[in-house]
Length: 272
Ligand code: PXL
Image (cartoon, rainbow, N blue to C red; front, side, top):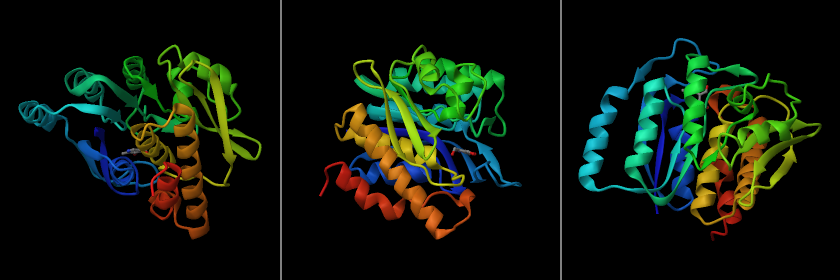
């Protein structure tokens, strides 16, 4: 099993590759990386960060990989810096995903009803196109709303957003649907049934939770879990990491303390 994670390197403020790589490796699989950009920090909650777009390097990286005959069982894409990079990911899927492999798209666009810096409507439309060629997509509620042209509300009709999202991709999960004291993932299982899984909500805003969820989800699918079990294990792990981060009282923009909860995640995957 070989996995490729396409995402940025935010050097500080755990998210993207600094989260995907350790979680997928801990889950027991080789995680190759394709960095889309290098930033001094991520863009949510910091100012004055550096941002180097790596698009120019990507074609020669891919040419080298072709010469090595590399192919992937799972490809996960996350933060993409430009419309051109979204197109590149589609090409990477065609050239490097094994027949029968799984293309997972985390359509990183925004949070709390707002797009992240650098993104606009044109980029959202491009991301819709990438979701159409994915096998599974894992947006948060904000992203699900942008992808389905639904006005964002924290108490949106989650099920109807999921139904609309299934028009783009048959297997979608929407994280961060807040219902009273619960945080719920709405998702479509293998049979096409709409389902939900709730964990206790932890008060506060936590940066990088979607990245922890996505990394854990990839590790779970790689280990052969069903969508139902993968959603449960990933939501539980993310909730535990959020809870620990709240206890630690670290600044939210520095990301989640997921490291301290990896052991429980691996046990939930059935690892000893
Ligand atoms: O966590 C999503 C993310 C990934 N990468 C970069 C970001 C963000 C969110 O702010 O800025 C660079």
